[in-house]
Length: 581
Image 1 (cartoon, helix red, strand yellow):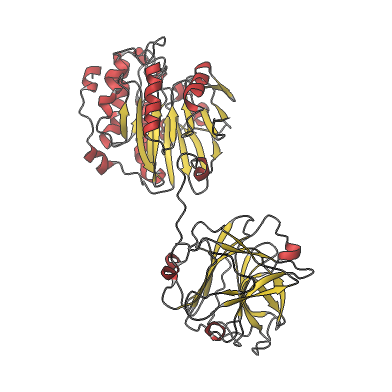
Image 2: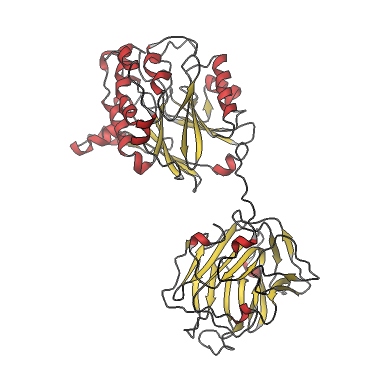
């Protein structure tokens, strides 16, 4: 097939792309594939497109399970920039065209006359991989007037991402175009691709330094920049003008077996873990494994060196906050939190008046709270809150064990909550945050939410009769623990969570469906939830506490940290109805 024939191929339609290539745009795990220099596979009479086709088929076959969203080629597609070479690799890439897969290419120094910039005019490269080829791709955003620079947009992790594919050498017009693209997408994180960038570990090439100085450093959107050209593989991390890390990678394997065997890099993004896991492999060699590989092929099948298989830690929300801050979730009216069977709902949108000393129960059931001071302690207030908390504020408890000092909250006498036994089930929720100075010697086993009255007073003397009837507390290892006496047991039933780090907001929920109790941390069930049947919560009609813990009927410990919204509902709620949803 001639180059002219390739360029005349009808562009893939948007309808075809939508029906055949379907990465999950909402998944917070997705993969960007990268293919570096393939020039030795397309070198005059030595053309062999089989390895490239194997890599492209791998992407198609694993597109769904890897959630592959895009492929970027880093230039030097061919050795001599000849029509026949471009005809061959252009035909290989039809595998992606037919399925509507989003991808980008760019010219390397072997694809065009190396002494020219993107103003060089017509070339076989442009005939085959010019803008006309991508016109119908759903990811194609546009190209510079000369055709050698392009940008592409894909959706992943619920947001838009931009790939900026730049020519071997940018002209002043090319720089202007690139800056214009960035200006028109001011809130979009950008992956810059070009042929020459990094020359070795911790070092940019002369041209890479020019790109840094003229484009990358002052555009905070560019967080990842990828190039080939040199070998072996290497990495650079630099601070941009905004003080944020930019990760710059050199990927090229043309010096290895079979001209690199069309190696591909898989950049696996995991937004929840805050990491990009990088893997390098040759699908062509992998596909030959069933027939038996020689020693060299086995070494080249997958690369495991530090520059080939690694992880890049990125707090994506924080990294992108300078140009695309995540809007804070608005406070929700209390009325929206009053689901059927709500027994009590307390929130701290403003400071509590220490003299008036009352926090109203917003459920309307009269389970109001009064302040109890110990050793002259007081409650503070902060606007700090869990990002998904309905109320935008928290109380600051300053408990200390020895000598006992602080302040806590206690329901007034004779409330419905004090008498409730919850035979049909319950959900107890609370938001909390522990400060950096939290010390287990002075702050462990303080209660977030507790029911007063002892097991002994209720006639339940198994285990420790001086323990309170119910308490959601934090152990000396900062593990949340729900310990209580069910109506159907003499002893104490206990649910345990895992250690929760300091200076982080957490949401806890204890859910009982009338038969079993499950403790959730951030909406996730913990491991140590007992299998035994648990019905209701034993009561002797005494108050509940927030931030206090009684032992033997006397206050024994006071919480040290911030406490946000607290809600108690007289039935089991699904996770989707928790306050952090």
